[in-house]
Amino acid sequence: MSDLLQEVVVRHPSVAFLSQDFLEAHWKQFGYTACPDFLQACADFDRFVEALENSGATVHQMSDEVDAGMDSLYVHDPALTIGNGIVLGRMGKAERRNETTAFEAFCHSKDIPVLGRIETPGLLEGGDMIWLDEKTLAVGLGYRTNEEGVRQLRKVVEGIVTEVVLVPLPHFRGPSDVLHLMSLISPVARKKAVVYQKLLPVPFIRTLNDLGYTLIDVSDDEYDKLGCNVLALSPTVAIMADGAPKTRVKLEREGIQVLTYPPKEISLKGQGGPTCLTRPLVRR
Image 1 (tube, helix red, strand yellow):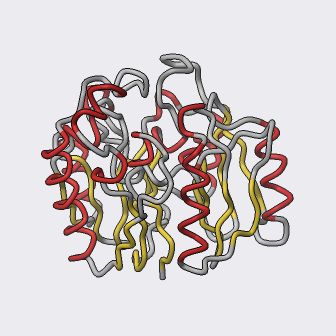
Image 2 (cartoon, helix red, strand yellow):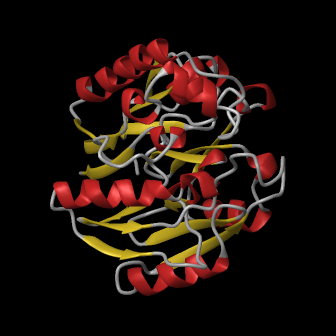
């Protein structure tokens, strides 16, 4: 998850948000903290994509052929990338269920193999899955991903993944809040990760320590500013939401160049940082 990002898919606000009228009618239903400004969201997202492209990544824009709702801006969650293929999840948030259909249509348009999909009653969201190394996959169990989803995932990845590490997630702010495993940890380099340790279970922290990880802890005041949500563009470059200077300094001390983007309209109001805004397809 920290190798050089070469290909990535995004869903532009012009497709996910549709219009200011649409946002005014739906932002409360989708649980946003405030209504986004449509034009500013589009402009800020363009700056974010420009940073991805300047890093050398090819950015694929998901089309509007499937109406998937406001949260489809956070394109990371409907799928998991495994090798040269995709496993399609099943969203734990009911308003997001059509996002899997949209991602499947994208895969077909790009001839990306679909290796499997999670079926009812399984739940599995991409934000709950983190590669700790090439063969070890950590999966968060919470309101968005359940045991049946993990059982089905194990069958799909058999022979590809050596170990699936289950990470029980806390109730914290309840089922309506966005709490994925990736809300609490972001790998930023080989054996280095930004973490919010207060909400991580002790056995998982021990697993990270046993694997030799350096843990870069996020402070309480920067957690809600998405300081724990950092996207690695390479082993030495990462991008994060502007507004978490203490976390940025800690990353720079670890030899990581940090890029930022304006998060108010596309990240803070929907609580989805740069990892949420992207689904990496190819890393080398």
